[in-house]
Image (cartoon, rainbow, N blue to C red; front, side, top):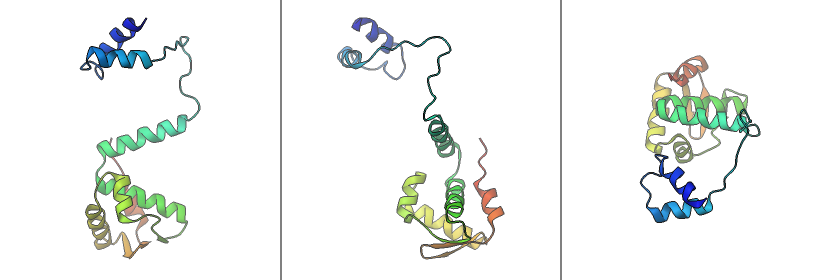
Length: 140
């Protein structure tokens, strides 16, 4: 049974470069589970899976500017007001968006120069929500 698992793993590109010993360890830990044809594999947490796919798509295909605009719109919706305090630091926001603090600060300055928002330390004032929403649009 274990040898069969090793052969199966060897055919999967992710595992193709593993040594026989590494495949053996993987096969020993692998649990075989069979599903009936048409069985539902994802039901609980399906929304989280869709959300994760959306995040991966936006990071892969969207610019930092688009991701930042989308994050600011989320914070705006959560606050329920045009003036709100950023719930995270620029550093934390950068980590969430897969970039560095300097890029976040630069793009916030650009949004401010374009009249989309006003930055007051950790407070933001959304001045043109429609323009911010256009910035957030990602072409997938």
